[in-house]
Length: 95
Image 1 (tube, helix red, strand yellow):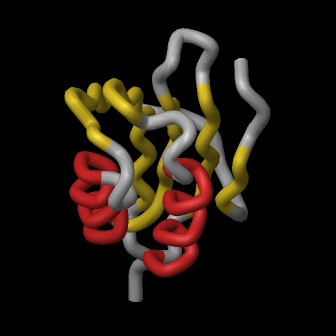
Image 2 (tube, rainbow, N blue to C red; image 1 turned 180 degrees about the vertical axis):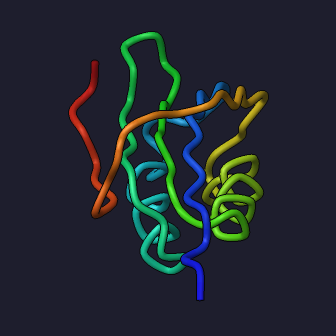
């Protein structure tokens, strides 16, 4: 039996996404979905994330990311092809 293909996407989230527990909430959602990668704040006020997993898990993560946690207000999200290989999901330092 074949292993499902891994999908990797780089996300950039705009709006009220810092100071609203976005990163912590994304870490929890990633654990729930079995997604690996990372999330970090950027100095320009956006949140950036790399998400990796099977197609369905990544699709569900993108759906969640468009809304974020309750206090967040995502006004736009860009999605690009990502790269790398990840074994866990982590919160990274601001860059």
